[in-house]
Length: 116
Image (cartoon, rainbow, N blue to C red; front, side):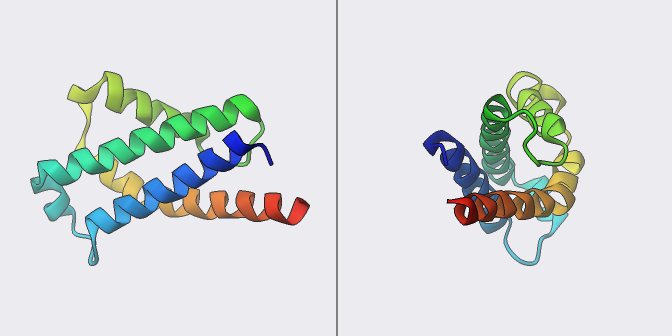
């Protein structure tokens, strides 16, 4: 496995884990919505995830990541359209999209390690 490929996959996993560590259990939207520090920490990790997915797409355009383009677009919105970020949309990503992404990345890591 190319080291950059492996690093990007691990960056995604690490960033997702950090988001969930910051959010805590139970996951409460109102806590997220009222805490600017929490929002910024989550947004930074979403930027990292988006950049890692972008790099993966450059290495393998057919990579099995659902909604890769939307993930990259979210990164671009956070960086360039920061004044348009909506907390409720970020929350949907946290609750619905990140678990799917994490599972897909784990599969990619497993398939790469099985193939070596």
